[in-house]
Length: 449
Image (tube, rainbow, N blue to C red; front, side, top):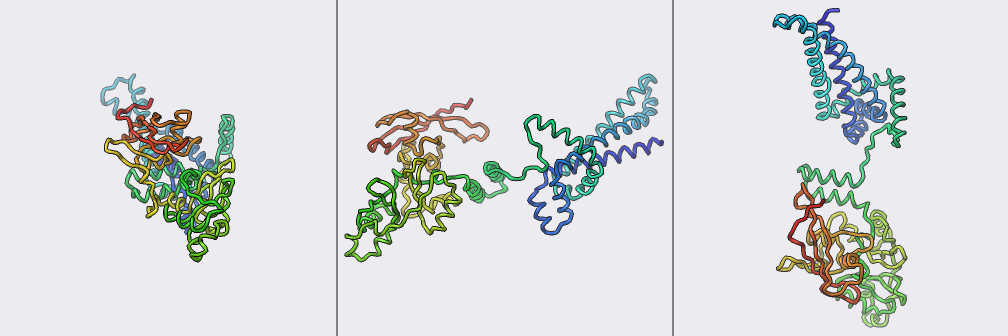
């Protein structure tokens, strides 16, 4: 056969190899949600891509088979053809007759390999990565036809590979997993914000929304020690006085055993005639409480509060005791961020001193401390507050003057996360509870091993 005709066939195989490579990378990288939208909109080629994605493993095996066959054909044709073409030029250059053959074969092998790598592998790969949707639409029909025609050998090869994979303890998948966990989505959102493709405020809102469903009532509640309550035997005027003193409008109501038996809104007391406020007991005005476990996710919690028409729920711990309260405002703030109003006083519980240390309430949660100070205190399952962190670190009930040392991550340098020591000094106790804490960050930086 004519040498130039063989070379033309080899070049055709290089192009065919490129089609298989482009199809393979396009199917792996194409945006599946975009494919679904276009298929739903009546795009026939997008519908074909969607069909290919449903049998992804088989189609990728077809692409691999096509790449292997074309590479074998290229090697069989291109190397000897190229070596024949350069024999005469090598002879004219004065290369000894004994060296012409090996030199021609070597040069032919190098040239055919380079052409195959560049035009049959790298160029189509880069096109598929840059234009995955267009590439997938252009190649999916050919690839599905090739896979169907060669279904028997592909099933044998795929079955053999799957059997080996199962022996390794991995279950093969026909489709690529398209769902993403909340952690993966949050990481993607943060990366988009860092690269400037998402506005920082929009990224924060989206990230909060993604993480919303993973948080629980126990993580956002106001601990019991920081709540204000009433006894069921108190008078209505006590409700008005407590509302005036605290700035809050809703309160849990306790019985003689310190159990929550209801909730009351100040409007119920204000709505009474003035002369009845001193005689009407809270138990006659209170409503049945909404009680939720501390493990309840925020999605069903918000749905429950909205369906019941309540703004507040009582949170119970695993032993059935009151752990705290959570309001609809607390839930919404997990999405939109802090909603400051005239009653919010959390910022007053953290004050920056002139020496650079912080004066904190011992009832602040670690996440609240991070929001207020930027210092990421460790969170734990056996405590909810800064006071609890100190007690957990010391292993006993703290006393005034005790100092707890904890290591916190310093992320000021994104390329190297290091640890810094934070000193938590107990400044004031309220019985057995840590009331005020001084927080001081060590100026030194110690690299994390």
